[in-house]
Every structure is written in C-alpha cells, then in structure tokens.
Image (cartoon, rainbow, N blue to C red; front, side, top):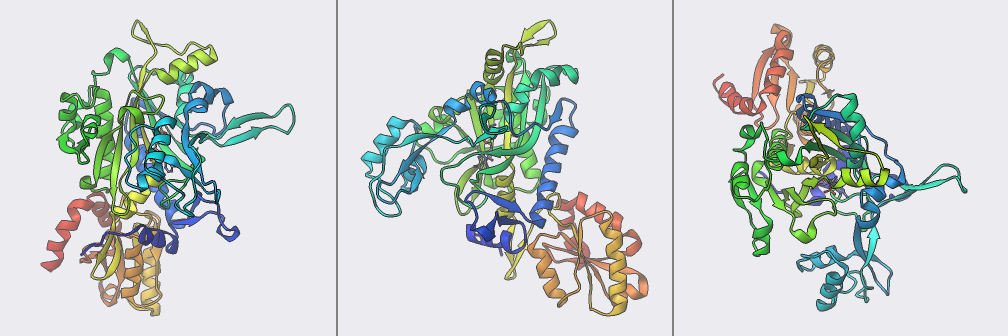
Length: 510
Ligand code: GAP
C-alpha cells in the first residue's frame, strides 16, 4: 500500500534523517535558504553525476564549463535581466507584509494569463483581493527585480556594483567564442554547466521548491538557425510518450494535456523545431531513468504572455506533486540568437562563427534543470508506506546510500564478520553499518532513507561464508557467497528494474 505524502511528511523526513536543514537555524534562519545535510549531500552528488554522465561525458558534441558566480555587471544589462527579470510585488498598507501579486491571485483560484502591471492591477481590483494576513488594503503591484546586488572591491569610488547570477546560462554565452575556438568545436554543439543561481524571490515557499539560492544544471545547445530541423538523433527519441499541454490547448481553456509521442508533437507543429523536440525527449528520458514516474510528468508550453524576455518558445517539464499539483522542474527554451546577439552588441566583440563556409550566429536550445526541485520530486515520488512502514523507494542511481550491513545479533563473532564485510563493500559502494537495536528496526531505519540493499550476517554465515541480501522494496532475500558479493551487488544495481521483479520469483522458489 502506498500513500500520497503531504509537504509536511516530506519536510519532516528530510530534516529528521539529515537530507536538508533550514540554513542558520540556530539564529532563526533566513527564508529561502537550505543546507544539504549528509544524506542530501550524497544524493546531490549522485544526481549531478548521473546528469553529467548522461548529458556531457557520454556525448562528443557537449563540453562542460564551471563559470564564476560574480561577473561583470554589463553581462546582466546585455542579457536583459536588469530590465526584464522582474516579478510584481504588492504591500499591505496596514501590516506591511509583501506578496507576489500573481501568486496571491492564483491562491484565490484566479487565472493569471498576462503578467503585466496593468493586467495585475485590473485583476486585483476586480476580485477585491486583500491582505491574506490582516485583511488590509493592498498597494498597486510594482515591478521588483529578482537579482541580488553585490559590491565588488573595497568601499568607495573603486567598488563595482554588480549582481549574483540569477541563471548559470549567461556564462556559456559570454565564453561562447573562447570555448568554440579552444575546443575546436563544430556546429551543432553544446556547452553545459552545473552551479548555483540566486534569485531574491518575493515569497520563497514550499520547502525546496521556491528558494533564493539553488543549483541549476543547464545546457546551451547551439545550432545553425537554418538547420533547426536537421537533428540526426531524432529517430532515437521520437517515440518517447508524454502528456502534452500546448499553448493553444490552454488558450481554449483546457487544463489537461493529451498523451502523444514527441514525434507526433513535432509533426503536429506543437514543438516547432526538431532540435527543440529532441532535447525535450532526451530530458524526459533522463528524468525517467533516475526514477521519476512517467505518469507524473508532462510538458506544458508557455503561453505567449508567460514567455521569458529571451524565449521564442518554451516548454516546462512539470511533475505532479501530490501537495502542489503540476509544477515546473525543468524549462526547455528556444532562446534563438537573442543572447549571443545582445552580447555581441554590448561588448562590441564579433560572436559569429563558421558553419562550413557560412558565417552564423547560432540559435540555442536550452534545457535548464533545477536540482533541488528534481530532488524534491524524487523524494516525493519514492515516498511509500508499505505494511505501515515508510520506505523511500529511490532508484539506486540516486539513493544516497547503496548498501547496509548488519550483524543479525550483537554478538562478537557476528559483529567481527559483519565489520569485515562492511570494510569490503564500502570500498566500492557508499554503505552504512548498523548493529544497534533489533534487526527489524535497523531495516526500518535504512528503508526510510532509501538504502536499496541490505546484507545480514547470520548463523549460517559463520558456517558457510554466505550472507542474506535483502531487497528494500520487496523485502525478498537471497543468499549470496561473500566471495561473490561485490559482483552480485554490481549486477543487481545495474539492472535494478528487472531484478526487483526477478528476485521475487527466485526468493519464493527457494
Ligand atoms: N536559464 C533559464 C532559466 O533559468 P528558469 O525556468 O527560470 O530558466 C530553470 O529556471 C529551472 O531552475 C527551473 O525549471 C527550476 O527547476 C529551477 N528554479 C528556478 N527558480 C527556482 C527557485 N526559486 N527555487 C528553486 N529552483 C528554481
């Protein structure tokens, strides 16, 4: 039996078991900042490594960079963020509380289709929206830039005011020409980066979902504008199926999408270029690969008024959170040549490159993943109650700990053997050793943090050097020779989805 968790269930688990903590809690915390705890830190590394392997290391056409967080302020003028990276804020005239205008309307069930000052003023007035906290009158919405200001250098005339980066993307545009030349790249090619981004969100909320300091995993994939429909890998992904909610469907008032393949979404003209369709499909493949249920994923196109200042078409990959509904975990935009052209204009440097004989400023498709939102989705997706016990059924690829080692009873010969096995296993896999409390409690503790496999040293181990290997989700057990244990774990973890089904048969026929 499984139960849909509430946001409180997820938050409690994450804090209680050391995945995340509210940052600087002993001083009362700052809203929108979280620290990764020991298990969250390991999980972060697993998700990042899986992403990097899948999108960068396994491909010849993508290279990675690791750019600085603070850059020349002109980067953000050229990128359009100084002018356009805004949300609208309203203040209560009575209690002084501040709110994001569109969120306030959405919470009242009022659809916001146009994010302009005029339309927000109109909607707030028409619906007589007041302060949710004290019922006071609200100010008119004002634009609020989400970038954090910083000052570089000693105070005084020589200090330079700039911003913390609100997206990692710009570093890939400003370094574009140097990367192209130094790596002798040929179109089409991509640049990838993982790193922190900072946004001074008006109302951070929903645990990790909307925070002020978070990590992005982004790719800028550059293509000759005339070749946006020439994607040699398209046939590999065109059959990926997903629920699609197009802009047109939304404009007709539809809330639910239609299931179709990515190939069909392209043929029907919903996704307008093949390269864009390819990157949407590949993103979905990776998200499913690390354990998200395909049924809880959909793609939703941005309606015109929602598009970011740089985008000509955007699809969000949304995950169906049981406690928030469909929410964005990744955005995939066609940014055209907007960024490179703007940086060329503001820097005065030629950012065109050669595609054969042709001089071009490439178009860019940008898959942009939010790490914390993906971790939140993974933990939510794998939160199960089985026989009244919490089991976090994380895919082994992203589970922070892969193996638990336990002596069945706390007696010297069992403990000695168990520690021996633990020393061997931990050289290869992140493992835990636990000898305290009953074996049932130890299994329960490890199930709660998603440890896929447990090794138990029992009486038979001392006779024939075999151990039991326990599967987290099915609780099935098989016996394995200690000499073979590493190979067996390797095989099981690499074929996890097949193995979980297989092992039930194997274990029950013993
Ligand atoms: N470079 C494009 C870009 O930054 P975005 O849709 O603003 O696009 C990309 O952000 C992803 O970053 C989102 O899909 C989301 O996963 C994550 N993200 C954005 N704002 C966030 C926030 N305040 N807290 C947590 N994650 C956030």
